[in-house]
Length: 303
Ligand code: THF
Image (cartoon, rainbow, N blue to C red):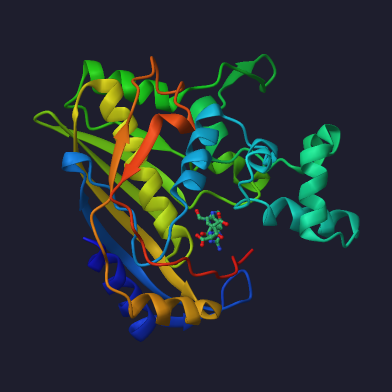
């Protein structure tokens, strides 16, 4: 299964359109890509040709499900993957050229500072579990209504109406995009029940294949497995679709090294407990078996 990932990486590197991007680093890119993974028998699309920090990706997914959009809970668990964006905003808006590590220490140690500078705006977590609604008020004004918990609604709709074509979790809230530190990349999840199997399709508008995609595949499969457990279904297929699917030019060393490696083994995910709701999972509930990857390959993230 992992050869699909490596083949995509090779194709982009050899044939992708070389272009300037928002971050100024430059990418090679293809438009429109698809990967399919069978999740039956607890199989997971966990990349083995480099070490993927699946616990970090899991903590990120659990943080999405809390609805929190501040990096502080991640920082407190030593998860660093969202630190660059609040840091960049702080430097831009205050002119204080504080080092990233010092900024992150302050987010961890100073709650008021974290409240002011650690928030990413209404990103994934907010839209997933508290999509805002508005009630019209006299005079053409609006008041805030109750937020919509899309995740709870999908779990419920899968239970009561599995054949529905509307099992969707959407991150792309057009009205709120300007307030987000980054518009959602993995923006749409759709679920589909065939027999007793739950299939998941993820559409991602923009994909950093070297750094982000291993995390995104793991997280989507994990979310599907959690929903499988909560709905008493069996794991089906994960279908991943990418829009602008790219490799950053400064990831060359990672790409060359990873393409020289062979996948090894078939990692499996065991969920060791059955929480009472999709919102009650914790990191200790997950155990990965048969994961003996090649070594990690470090590369900088484009901000
Ligand atoms: N922006 C860019 N340019 N790439 C992305 O992958 C990305 N994301 C999220 C939002 N914006 C993005 C952030 N997710 C890593 C992994 C996921 C990220 C950001 C960074 C990363 O650096 N991974 C390293 C180190 C992991 C660690 O230290 O724990 C790795 O080797 O995997 C994708 O959704």
